[in-house]
Image (tube, rainbow, N blue to C red; front, side, top):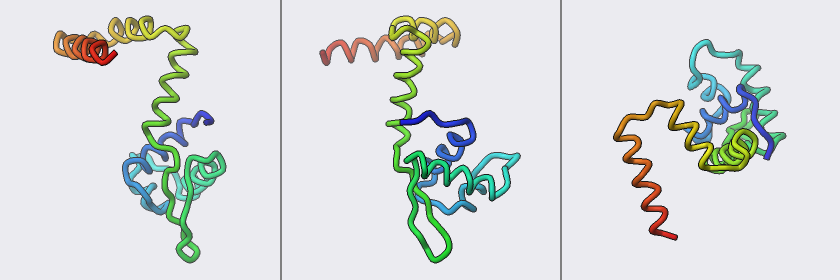
Length: 122
């Protein structure tokens, strides 16, 4: 799976949120300042070439839908982040996140609960 550019990821976020949509619908759902419709159409075609998007033809129009789920792309991105920036160490990644995000007590309690629950499952 290829990595997405910022513009491609922005379009994918809209498609994941909307579900199947025409390019004009994708454009309408994007935050301001919006790019031109031709730019959105070009990005969608690139995403289709990369295998992230497919389409159904409706005459001369195309309705696009995500082929790669948000979950699958997110999982891949987290694994790459872990490998590239934290030497594959989940502990180093979680430590950096906790220190940089200044989590409050309830967030830390939530993380501890997740860890305990996961440990019980093993």
